[in-house]
Structure formats: structure tokens, C-alpha cells
Length: 89
Image (cartoon, rainbow, N blue to C red):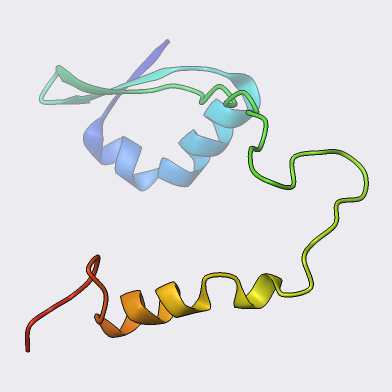
């Protein structure tokens, strides 16, 4: 693990990020000799399965009126005329 001061970290930030990503090395960034932050490689997040009505693999049928589904409720919410989004003017 490397230790460097804040000025050097700011000056070489892009290089530090590239080095951390490429090698996995960690850096301690200090101000006036006091450790302030640690720069570590990010471990990739696990992919989570997508959920929803189109979660099935293969062909999925989409209703012909898909774009019109709940259009009245959406319009009410958009214009503030519904019990969910009503606003007094």
C-alpha cells in the first residue's frame, strides 16, 4: 500500500485511478501526515436478474395497446388532476 500527500494525489489523480484499476494497488491519501482517505479498486457488483413482465427468455407478447395502457391515470398524474397528484393552484 502506497502513501502520498493530498497535493500529489490531486496532481496525479487520473494516473492513480488508472493504476488502481489496472493493478489493484491501494493508496492512502494524507494531509499534513494524517491519513484522510483510502483509494482502493472497486469490485464489480454482482449482476442481479431483471424483474418484470418481460422476464421470460424468448419471445414475449406485448399487447397491441401497450402505449395506451393506463393513459388516463398517467394524464391525471401529469396534469395534477388525480387523487394521487392533486395540487391546489
